[in-house]
Image (tube, rainbow, N blue to C red):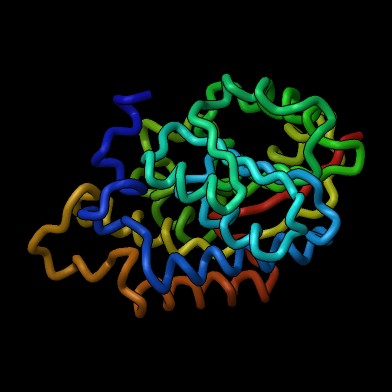
Length: 260
């Protein structure tokens, strides 16, 4: 784990051109919450779990709109002590661990479980889905966001440079059909499935093709292709939104599941 996710890994490395923060990151989190609110009535949630929650930004925002007694739990590989204290003050419990720690969740005890860009990292996603099914409340929902082996960027870069490959960390990549089949095999019913904008994979694909580093910025004129560049992120987001409007899949997908 330490070798796969070192301190230079872009999600936790402020020096990385792929480190997501500021206005663009805040906008993404707000869109995540809007999507969740379109799927479930957050006013009636008793327990929310965010697996691979990162800095717990989704939970902090959800905490402001759910009832005060709603349980909010975040699981990730590591947290800074200051983050744990901040979360505790907000009524959020953070737990360090991986998918091997799913047993810390209660059986049939959670109304909403979120897995955002996590399923593809797991060694055995079917086994994880089967275990999570037992943790969902009878009417609970599991919301998954994961790369989609499709979209224009996948078509352009699939031979070598596609950002969704993300070697060596993405062990399993799904199409919409294979994701739905995996969910059904694990005992779920598919409620809703669709595409999401994926400006990150566009930017990562181009950076891969141009030989740019992900741990630090170089001197290339193409370094404007980064997660903090609003025109670049905005342009690729707009392109993917046009594709979604036209019924064309992107390289990012979601599925909303309930227990069978």
